[in-house]
Image 1 (tube, helix red, strand yellow):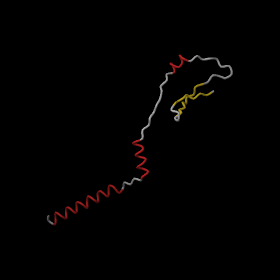
Image 2: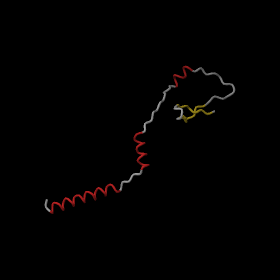
Image 3: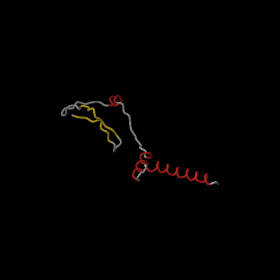
Image 4: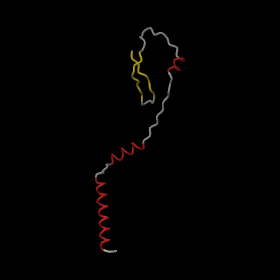
Length: 93
């Protein structure tokens, strides 16, 4: 191997190292960031739900007259109980 070829190989190696350092120096990730990203990509959520049609319930329910309380009004907000995995409609009087 001649001297000019050797010098060119060394020059190319130094240039590659310099470029690699330039690209990777701006990137630093801490352990907490790595853990958060791992959880974000790998955690799974199991979601169970039931779909109930109001028409199906109306056929089974026989309403009775309430003497002591005024009728309930359905509000626009729907409250979800995440801990129990069920959902319920919020009512106001």
